[in-house]
Image 1 (cartoon, one colour):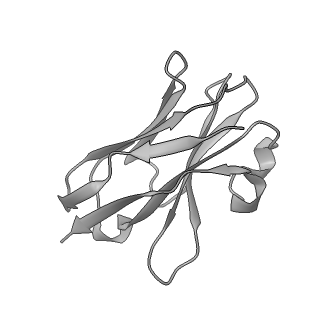
Image 2: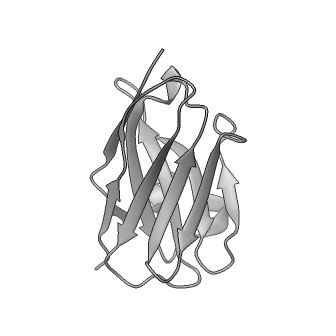
Length: 126
């Protein structure tokens, strides 16, 4: 059973940066995918970014491309999301998700992930 725990959220002003972390308590495999999703009040959960553990291949939502960077530390079984130039529309609860059987074409689909963290709040004021 894999458990993931997010940390690093907070309240910042527009243009500032935050780094989120997601630590896994279970072993991650080369074909595991770890991803970030976010959910704003009254909106559906949306894909933010994902990384394949072994190859380090990454993919981003268009809304964050060029501002957010996903990375991982294999020794710590931890994934990061560096968020720069934050905007008020980035305000949401950010969730970490992982799965070892997901296929790459499904990584943007929240329903494809079996393991989720409890989320960390990111609030950006204008």
